[in-house]
Length: 283
Image 1 (cartoon, rainbow, N blue to C red):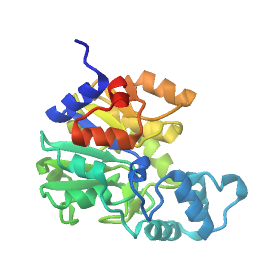
Image 2 (image 1 turned 135 degrees about the vertical axis):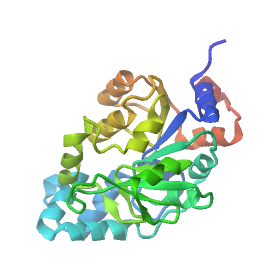
Image 3 (image 1 turned 180 degrees about the horizontal axis):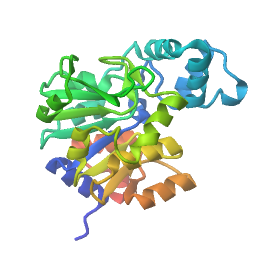
Image 4 (image 1 turned 60 degrees about the horizontal axis):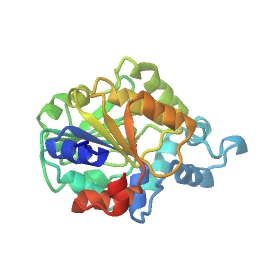
């Protein structure tokens, strides 16, 4: 009998061989008081600081303009203001925190603190946060234990769960990869994997990636995903509802990512209950 993609995902999660890779759309599962999409975030930034009209909808370019003309501290302060309200974990965060097989890697590519909050109740975990070269020259990431204390990289080898925030996070320290120059610094080195933490490289080996709340219409999101996935397995999945762009289709095909065309909320409900509606069964 042919195994469906949903059953493959269930089996991989049960075996501990699937790495959840979260995008900003995960926050759309429940109402939040922080920017939950790049469009929301750039709108908030440009409402606080005037930027040229032609880059008002370009998050990284707008952040770079603010950094150039108002100083790096201004963009960091605005990001802190945006995400200071915090986010309560939703059903997906809670489900992922309950996975116990093997040392677990969770990749979270947005700036909120929801995943860290739900992990705080379990212990034996830590966070690896991407940092800006403009603030931490010579370092690509900082490490924090389950109490939010800075620790050395070697500590990550003992954690049962590793939360990897490649773009930084509001907590436990306010580190953000947000401006054009932030991305240029990382992308200059990422092809040879220098910015990817050794523990992340170790845990991804032979594993599958499960993309949730991600879109790949932007070159930056595709590049990050491609480099984080490097040297993992050759089978992955992405839950993306609705029409895809040409570049998304190309990326999914190149990376052998099976697309699950479902609303994320419906997929999460299936994860929790194990029950398939008619729509799910057809996926």
